Length: 391
Image 1: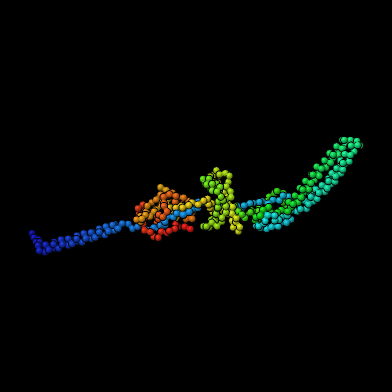
Image 2 (image 1 turned 60 degrees about the horizontal axis):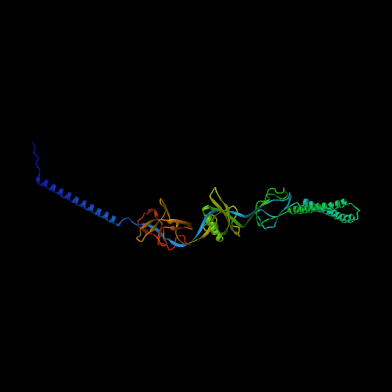
């Protein structure tokens, strides 16, 4: 039987060294844990970093009360020129697309048949005038003879009747002469209005019928009209402001940011369109350079009045939430407050705030996605003394 002896000195020494190493390891671990905990507490004590935002100051200013719409340019006056008499076109005195003035010659219809008709009517008038002159002499002679009983009263009455019939015939002849002269005048077709001619629908030598299809259409474009529609809810305001004076209307092409055409409201339709709930309006523009052209679409601004001392903010400050429109307001401690607002009109990048914001308060215009009520913010810009896009 083999006996194993423990070496007490060597074993005791190893056991003590193990205990010392384990103790040192625990001490290092506790130290690291405590340092990590202190670091985390320091970071938590500092709190989250402020959200970077840009802000602008709400202003109080005079703002025009306007209505915006899409309008269609229309001629101020349009005339479809038709021939009043039939015949062959012997002359065309204008070119397609030419500007013409009222009374300018447009085209001529062969006048010879109508000249002949006029001469025939004049001849008949001369003949019947001669007969009437003879009948009047007969009446004068018979008046003397009937007094002496040389002729009967019946014969005298017949003479008067013949003279009266010839008077009516002469009157009819005069009317026929007048009609023939009118027809002859219709052979020369002149511009009824000042404007620009369109496409010519007949050619030289064509034979046309009276009152048939238009030969050419003339549009008056100086001045020119723009028609547009607005919701019927604004009709009462439009009529009230229009009663106080002329309402200004501005127009611009879709690719223009600033309106450069100015005119006046000239027409309010006498009925509301029941299918759309809108009222048709028209504005008249001078259009001296003929820039506005019939058929074009333009952006229309109808100016009704001016809202005095209205509070305005940049439009990008207004946010939409479940509770309605709201704005983040920067408070004195650099935290934000969510403020529900009642909006007015929007114009040129600015929005009128009817309720919820006072002039002088700072509103956040960029960086709202990271905000919530009470959140701290850091301004990335010096709040301007004027709102965005403030003229």
